[in-house]
Image (cartoon, rainbow, N blue to C red; front, side, top):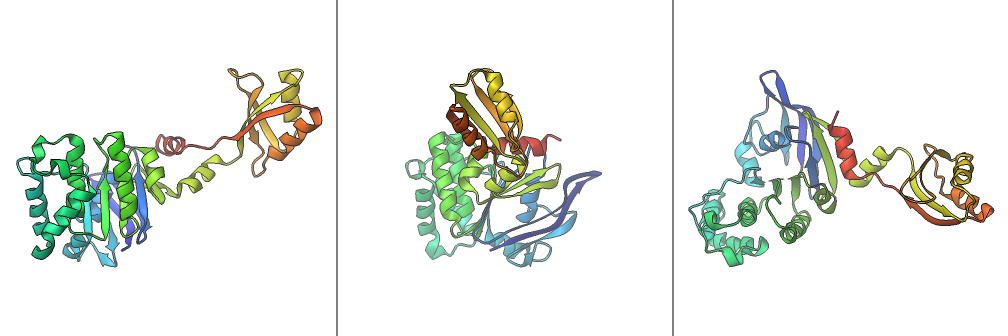
Length: 310
C-alpha cells in the first residue's frame, strides 16, 4: 500500500514545522526518514498516521485521503511513536490482547497473533512480566509488537531501536527487512548505519523541507561530485617528484600529501574523469611501486552533516 504526501505543511504560529513537502513511498518499500531534532520528522509521521491534522496539503494512504478517511487509514497503519506509550501496570500478554481488541482483530485470531508477536519480537522469556518491570529495550519490543498485532499493511516506526543493545538492534533490523518484503515501512532513526543496513531509500528533512531523496548509493554519488583517491607510491626519489608528476596528469586536479603516512596522498580527479588509469601508467613508466590506490567514498554521515548544518 502506497503513501503519497502532497504539499504538506504544519504551522505553529509563524513557525513551519513542516514546510510544503511532497514525496511518495511505494508498496513494499522501506524508507529511512532522517533529520536533526526539530526537523519535522515526528510531525510528518503524526500527520500520516492521523494523530495530527496538517495546516495545509494532503496525505493519501492507499488512495484514501487523511481528510475524510481517517478511521480506514488507521486500520491500515501500525505506529510506534517516538515516546512509546505503554501501560506499565499491565502484563505483556494482557496488554497485547487489549491492543488487539482495540485494533479490531477477530476474537478467533487474537491468541495466535499474540503468540506470533511474542515470537517475532523475542518476548517469550518476559511475556508474563508487567511492562513496568521490563528494561527499556524490552519495552521497545512490546511497542513493536503492539504496532504489528493487527497485521497492518503499513508500518510507521519512530526510532524503533531506541534502548536496544547491539544484538537486539541486529535482530530488529532483520525483522524490519523481513516485514519490508510485504509491507510499506517508514523508519525514523538517528543511527545512520541502521538506515544503510535496513532501508531501500533515504529521505532527509531539515527545517521542515526535504533536502535529499534517493538510495544511499545515489546520495553518495551526488555528494561526491568528483573521484577522490588515497594513493601510496614507493621507490620514488622524493615526495616532491611524485607530487610534480601527479599534478602533471590532465586527469588530476589536486594532490594533497598525507602527513602521517610516507609518500601517501589524497588525489582529487578532474570532475567527470577518473585518474586511476593515468596514475597506474605513470607508476609503470617511472618504475614506482603503487602500493595503494583506494577510492574514498563520501559517508552518509558526511552527507547528513552537509545537508543539515546550513
